[in-house]
Length: 386
Image 1 (tube, rainbow, N blue to C red):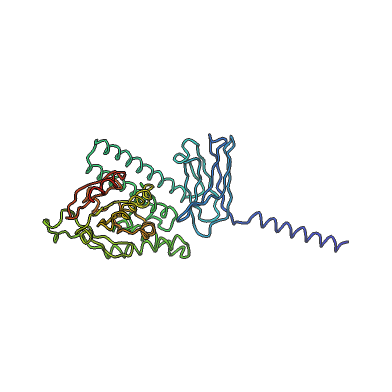
Image 2 (tube, rainbow, N blue to C red):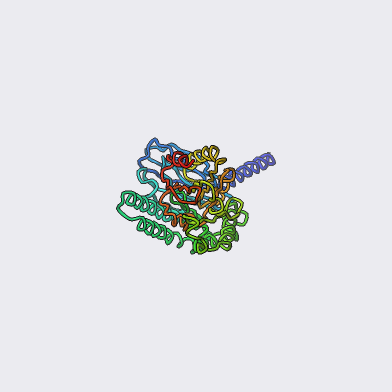
């Protein structure tokens, strides 16, 4: 009887030990809190990857607005977000922390509070600075379109707004370059273009600081490898860049500013080399823009119809993501080049490009004869020269 009791006791103690261990298993992170005024609405928890966003869970909010998600901790520091309708709250998870978020449905993305993660607090400050910049540039764009400010004023003030965001971001980047907040600050965008230009000699220092730190602290993280490769490629391009020299271009031979930029193979292609004897459509574009696929379909139809008659297309991408551009442009039959200066493109400035897409036509004699700001007119305007 004593032996039976002893055996039973050990079994019970063993089960308790297993249960206790399970209850204290630190393999999950938790995000919890309250969202007021969202009764009956569904909120989603999403993981923000390098190239995609994955929905992990969802909850239908009750009148009280309480929520709680618990998920396996990431192998390396990673990014997540809460999504309510079209509003987002971004936060970072380093390990098994518990992040508490209090928000209101009406101001979900801007007026929330976050506790339990200093990086997530910093991400909120960075997000608000990015939203301020977007709103300021949208206001400037409307003023420019309504002729309330000149093009020069518009361009100057846009640069000032971007620099104001960078001042906020750089505080987090240089104070703690190994942090998720620093990584997040690097990759904020406006109109699909990064604030920090990978091919700007000053901005690349910020990429280098974060890349070096991530490579040291998280050498096997996919984000570390991606960022390190981007930075190395950027530095290689910057070292290879040479100032554009127009001193040897004779005014009597051409009536356009020559352009020399690298194609998808890294080979420099001059506009002047294809202009002689051809009708050339110069197109400034951004492959990441939502209108880009439709535009390229139009260009494809034109190229198929008129290439044998002497049509060449010289398409200049201002995309900040070189990998996206290279993948999108690799199968296009016309000449696709990219300006690594992106939104700070001197070439676009010399051609007075104020919006994307913008196109120009060179006739067979090399005369710049037409500017096209409306993509709907491209087909009609090109046909006029055949």
